Length: 113
Length: 113
Image (cartoon, rainbow over all chains, first blue to last red; front, side, top):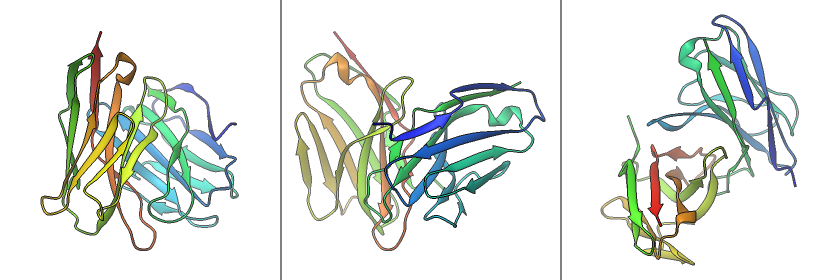
């Protein structure tokens, strides 16, 4: 009953370091997403993958890259972390098409010092 | 440009009272309006959703009211319970083709015992 699994759950980075957040879903969903959540800002879409083999920028893509490794996995990479990237990151997935429920992982808390 | 505006930012309601959270949207192409509930330390989860062909949808103590002409929709929580204390997000997406959800900034609800 895993759903959407993301790792790590907590990470502290130094400015300029790189890291990759991993995400996997076991619901056979075509679409996957990365959001960030900041106090008072709600959920903002970073990147999404409508289907395997495609990725598109969301509202706040700067400073991030993504890879849709296969249908199950969608990773988010910070090449050179900045304090402004301190946030809670959520991976999510859904069936293709508007109106389908988006299922979220439990979040990854990232602090950049 | 914020396409979905949510209010209030925070709300305190006594146990047994009615909690009301409001959202307004700008894009008339939106035709799917879900509400997500998020408990501390967890990812958001779908609570209830509505399409604009109906003015109201009720699921247990949770009701969405939809006003297409005013481009507004609201979540009503009847007989609010301490266990309803969470952050609530409204969202919207377009119906045709592939569309990602646009979220409001969230409302922190505290139901006092």
